[in-house]
Image 1 (cartoon, rainbow, N blue to C red):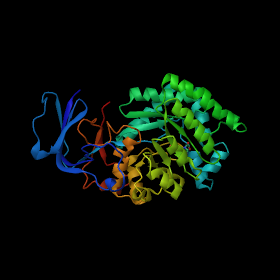
Image 2 (spheres, helix red, strand yellow; image 1 turned 60 degrees about the horizontal axis):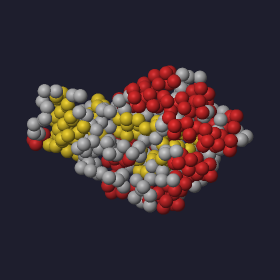
Image 3 (cartoon, rainbow, N blue to C red; image 1 turned 120 degrees about the horizontal axis):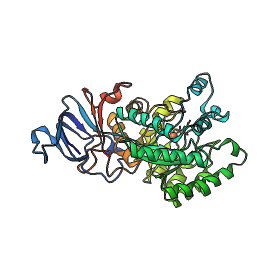
Amino acid sequence: MKNILIKNIKGLAGVLENNTKALRGKELTSINIIQNAYLAIENGIIVDYGKMENLQGIADWRNLEIIDADGKFVLPAFCDSHTHLVFAKTREEEFVDRINGLTYEEIGKKGGGILNSANKLAQMSEEELVTAALKRLNLIKSYGTGAVEIKSGYGLSIKAELKMLRVIKTLKEKSDLTIKATFLGAHAFPLEYKEKKEAYVEVIINEMLPQIKAENLADYIDVFCERSYFTPEQLDRILDAGVKAGLKPKIHVNQFSILGGVEIGVKHKAVSVDHLEEFDDNDTQILKNSETIATALPSCSFFLNIPYAPVKKMINHNIAISLATDFNPGSTPSGNMQFVNSLACIKMKLTPEQALNASTINGAFAMELNNELGSITIGKKANIFITKPIPSLAYIPYAFGENCVEKTILFK
Ligand code: NIG
Ligand code: FE
């Protein structure tokens, strides 16, 4: 593996000497930046960094690529901890339905939404799904993402859920992004179970989970706890079974209504509870006293025209927060973490520093990748992006819609 020296970096951002816990409260408000810096990478690992005037010898000059980053910033690659980026087809027709007045829930009720995606996915082969997902992974890499969590949940049958998880396994092998897999069999009730929902919960617990465990196909378990989807009681049971199968929870809660899912997630030691567009004082109390990360998905709020998760309030209450895209064909057809940062600043009133911390190091915590990714730290993987020449770090969220990333460098 070649070694890399990046020199003349205008600002090396996201430098953390060590970090054992996700950032909270005031810790989120600053980002360590070394101006006029260098970064040395050996065999894919960060081995040295500092000010240009302190640049010393590199261990192996023979095999060295030198990158001149004059005028450019270097940051840890984004860690996008919540996506559904394996899917069959896009759903522009529902987008038009919503413009014409239908809500996301109404579209779901008439057989669109998640069931629409499941029908389309059943007709696609594993190879076709891999090819389509690899394209999306390359696209998000070009926007600066280096690690991503991907959920199943457009299968909704044993065969198709396993197919999705095998696709994600292949992506782990083929892509240079770091990938975590989440089993989301409890995403919606298939039509044939509409009148016997409990039977589908039994299929998830007694048929899907054992196979997933046997083939080691997932890292996490997820449930969409929401009216017309899975009840808190079903969430509780599915998480219990998932944890027994060795999967930690990362769950969909409080997107449209508060049903008590946050409390159940924390009870099962969820790594993260995600969405939280609806959020009350009880949720605040529960999360502030836990290690569970609150993951907000502002581009979903933007696209569906629903409230934004109150992350500023969460930060004030010392809750650990992260930001992710929710990339999926129904509620967020974008995997662009720079846009997520813009929305976090513009709509959620985070500072650029808070948004960047929430999308890098805290995103890594939300995928349990914090020991290897998410910051410029000696010994971590050198998964980084180099910006185009830009005036300041705040320019990234400010210049919404512009791709400020020139190059993403990733190692596995
Ligand atoms: O996170 N809310 C549930 N799941 C996805 C949307 C899935 C879809 O519409 O296809 C979400 O928004
Ligand atoms: Fe989601």
